[in-house]
Amino acid sequence: MTVWRARDDGSRVARVAYTGTAVPPSGIAVHYDAAGRLTRTVEHVFEERGETQGRVAVWRDGRRVLDAFVEHTPQPSSRSERFTDCTAERDVPGWVVHALTTSGDPEAVGTGDAGAPGGFRVPFADTLLLCSRQADRSR
Image (cartoon, rainbow, N blue to C red; front, side, top):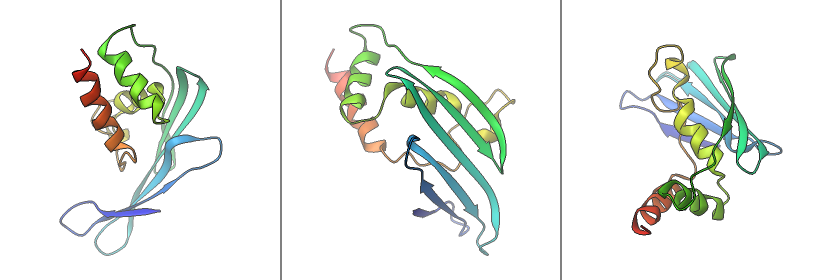
């Protein structure tokens, strides 16, 4: 479990990663206000369906707000392919990265605002940053 301060007001988020058949960064984030009262939950589940595809499901406060099939096959010799190759070498499939960037904030579903995944810290953010830099340098 990872816990971090969400805002300067003292609110916190506790995140538990799922193991088993779920692909990282599957897990649940539980949000608490400064008084320790539960304010919301956000759950992300990523399931691999092939080397370049999978399913992402998101629940907010126990209500499913997203259930989508994701496929990511980058064009050969593109920046996207270099990036995907780099993340795959570090056990982060390209379709998971694509799902993160397209699933957006569960609160924004239906509003047209993709936003960032709510209550969610990417446990491999350093890998994404490194691979992004490598993909840019490999032109």
